[in-house]
Structures are given as C-alpha cells and as structure tokens.
Length: 93
Image (cartoon, rainbow, N blue to C red; front, side, top):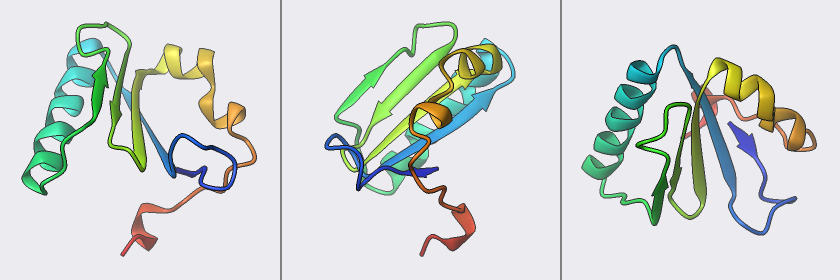
C-alpha cells in the first residue's frame, strides 16, 4: 500500500496486489469487492474485470490495482510512485 496523498491529486492510497493466474486474480478481485460492499463501500469505478491481467477498483480515497506478476513487473507502479511512503497493513486502525 502506497500513501500518495502528498503527491497525487487523484487519491490518497494505492493498494497493489498480485494474482498468481487470471483465475486467481479474478477470485481475489471478487472477494475484495464483496468484502468492501459488506463494509458499505461501493467503488466509483471498476475496470479490467474482463481483462486477463489487471483489475482496478476506484473507491475515491483508495485505488486498488490487482495484476498478474508479469504485468506488475512491467508497469512497476511502486517505482512510478517511488516517492510515496509504504504503509504497513498492520498499522492501519
């Protein structure tokens, strides 16, 4: 998870995760969406659910990217947002 609040005017956080296969990626994305909806959060935009290698969920203050490993390496969002501090999940209240 990247804290991009001070360097982006689009969102506060990017969450990036990796799926091991297209089936795994879609299953993780579906579980994510279900859990967020259970908590009362609905995405303002979803993209890539029919794609084979990248899904994006936009929740306004949090944008979640799920990618296959080779796609994640290719786009290297962590390097693109290299100035963003990393946030440890365990430190979130």
